[in-house]
Image 1 (cartoon, rainbow, N blue to C red):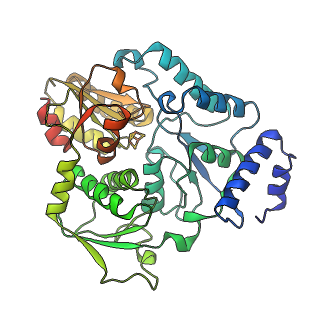
Image 2: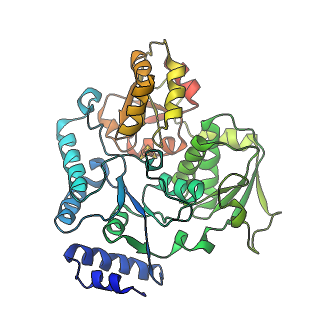
Image 3: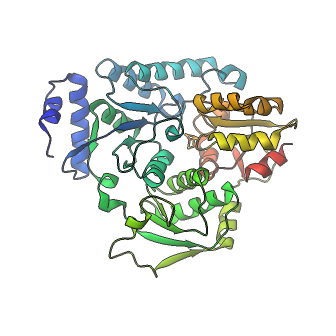
Length: 398
Ligand code: F3S
């Protein structure tokens, strides 16, 4: 790999043992992927935060790294395993929470912002078009590449953290413009009206394309919230890290600009396929004892919608809306938090239904409106899921 003088100096330890170790690992990674050089990045987003997923080994890794190096650019954390402020009220154990707080403190000690969210782009970590970044949460990677048009590979938590410490990442994959072009075309003849339908589309297409780049022709612009949902679904049933939507996403025009893009070779998707995919995402038809929204973490407009739906109601079952502390604070300012709490719901920050140890609480069936959550909850939490729209889920527990 071709390194600059500064990169070589870091590699050789002139900027400390921590940076040298990070460079060594990143260069080895670059060699595996035939990267010819490193590329400077402007931000990082680090997954591998929940004690449920990284355990004591992950905690030791963060503490150990913290003794040697700091991050040198804007770096945000993915969701943790508990709501840091309201863990007790939600029923999480003190033992788990203590470990979780140690992990977060470890990240904070090296300069990582403990935002604990998978939607960092909703709270200020919003790169510009074509900027190089190193993000690791798969839904956020899909959003940053596809909707924002910045460039990130689907990093692992450790590789994103190492990149944040040295300010660069190996130049391969999505960092190379040509690799961002579309591979398969999907003509979707369906008028989407709900997030559950668009999630069902993403879930279906992700299984077909795996790590290829899908190109969608939709009847209309689905909007930012639904693009967030679509990317999360694509990245969970497949390994998609970038998709394009004609006349909507910033690189769509560029994406079809190559000789193998054959306008006539398309996969047609109709209402039958969407319905089948949607129905296949539920594992039971029982009434959920918890409805859990906000996967990926909810935007303020998604929370506003829930507040409208539950206003004046007394919910019969639990309702969580997962988001960041920052969006929760805005919800309070706008009055949505009070409305939701008056109905018996909760805005849960820092965590989500997949990375929290929900299986240790007293629930059997979770209602979700996210195809990603519907895909992961049965395995990660060993619980049944009901997959439906936010309107229908609220109706079920009202
Ligand atoms: Fe985010 Fe958890 Fe879903 S990390 S994308 S809310 S599984």
